[in-house]
Image (cartoon, rainbow, N blue to C red):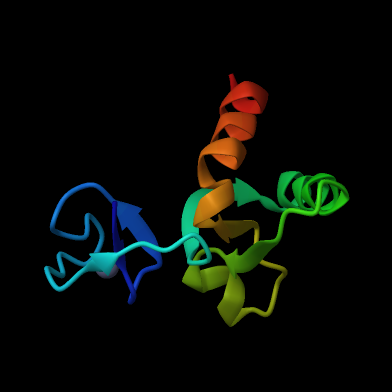
Length: 98
Ligand SMILES: [Zn+2]
């Protein structure tokens, strides 16, 4: 698995799906990787649940430019977890969303 340091995305290909960068390095267990965009409430709940399991995660506020211009709370988060927990967390999201 490869890793794009500008986007924090783990990908199988030699090219980042987001920025198109080709200079990727091999991902390590401790790299924070983008899992998904989640809404705020869901993200806050998930963070609590993951912390109970001692899984580190990072939530980055993410939303439309218009909302941030008016200083309204942003609607969603980008969720990042360490690569070693990546598959596990992705599975949780799959179960909850479907
Ligand atoms: Zn990238």
